[in-house]
Length: 325
Image 1 (cartoon, helix red, strand yellow):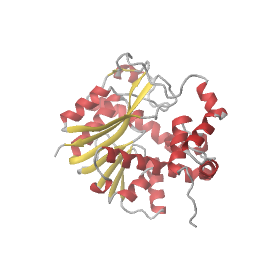
Image 2 (tube, one colour):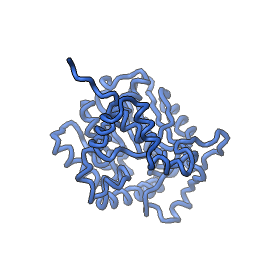
Image 3 (cartoon, one colour):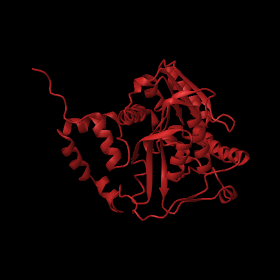
Image 4 (cartoon, one colour):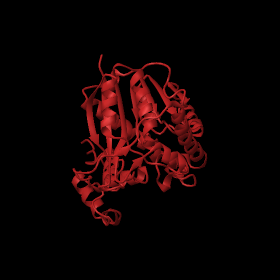
C-alpha cells in the first residue's frame, strides 16, 4: 500500500505565513512540522489564527486591509534630468553597498533570523524563499498565457546575494543578475560558484548602465524597485522596456500608493537620502502610460502582500506586461 502524502504542501505553509503573519517560516523544520500536524489547509489556517503572533498583528487592525477606494492620488515627481538621476542612484547605491557589507542577507529579507550572527542556521530557509518567488513567477506567466520554457534570457533586476537567482538559473538557459551593490554581487557570485551554476552573468548597475547592452526575453524584479526614488524607478523601467524583445515579458513588483507619501526631488536631495532603507511608491498610471508608450500590453495585474505590515495604508502591485511583436 502506497504511503499517503501529507495534505498540506510546502508552498501552502510558506504562503500562509506570508499572508497571515507577514513573514517566512523560521526554518524547513517548522514547515515540515506544520505539514505533519495539519491534514488540510483549513486546519493550518485555524492554527495560525489561534496563535499569539497572529492576535498581536490583529491588535492594530486587519493586517491586509486595503486603503479606501476614495484614497487621494499619490504625489510624486517621476522625471529628472540625467545629472539628477545619477545623484539619486548614487544615494541608492551608497546605502545598499554599505548594508551589503554589514548585513547583506538581512537587507534582502529584513527578518532577525537573517542577521549575520544567525544566518548560518537559517541559510536553507533564506534560499528556499527564492524558490517560492520563482514559483510565483511561473504562475504569473501562466496566467498571462505563457510558459517559462518560451523564454531563453531572463534579466533579474536587483539580484542581491542571489536568493532568487539560484532558482531562476534552473528555469532559464541564460540569466543576467543586476544590482547596484558590489558587496551583494560578490556574495551572489560566491553562492552561484559554490552551487556550480554557470549560466548566470552578474553586472553592477550604474547610471550609464542600468540594463545590459543586449536584448532579452524576460525582465523580472521583486521587492527591489520600492527602494528607489520614483524618477529612478521610471528610468529603470524605461530602459527595461526598451531592451525587451518583441513577445517578451516584464514581470515586476512596485508599490503604487502609500498613505501620506510625497516625493519632490529637491526636498529629497536637501535631506539625508541613503541614510536608511527607504520605501517609495510610483503612481500606477505613470507605469501604465510608460508601458503603453513602449508597445507593452498589460497581461496580469495583482495587488500583492509585499507591504503587509501597513494595513490599509499602502498598495503594492505586481505587473506582467507583454511586448507586442
